[in-house]
Length: 253
Image (cartoon, helix red, strand yellow):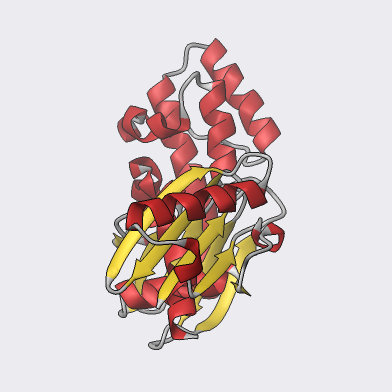
């Protein structure tokens, strides 16, 4: 089957095409129109694969913008998609941590990759990519630079996890000449602590996988591993996990 899985997130739209054992991936900013972003992704994937639109067997969409995609053959939740992808990549994993742009999720799965339980932090930006984006702006950095600029040896505690109050706290610390690298390490630790609390509520079973775009940040990885006391399995192309899961669901339907 020729299947496309789309993950239309709040910040980035990701696409995976599975074509007879080959995989093509593409990612673009979601922008203001999830529908336009999905169409652009499909066009990119078709161009990469040399395929035509009429050859597509199915399009499966997940993410916050999934309901806006008119051509979707199927719609699936992010939780189901991440569980399916991780079961394919790491069968030994029983717990999945996914940190995206607007929410954080912890998912427990069984040996077959079926969801047993989950928790979401979707009412507040704390502990999400959006939280880190706002803090990076306050620090005069791009969010992709945070991981390489932290200094855990001079960590500064960040007391607030509310995005507005944390931003004010950081501005005050900078005004007092506090080490920027230490502030960043404190931010990462606060995110790790908040997400680890969600993990403990759900419980750790088997190994732990870390998915989503924030998994690319080495500082958050460090902090979460310290808080959980275990190593994390991070897929190559971790930001494509949801799209991959969607495509795998389409293949098996």
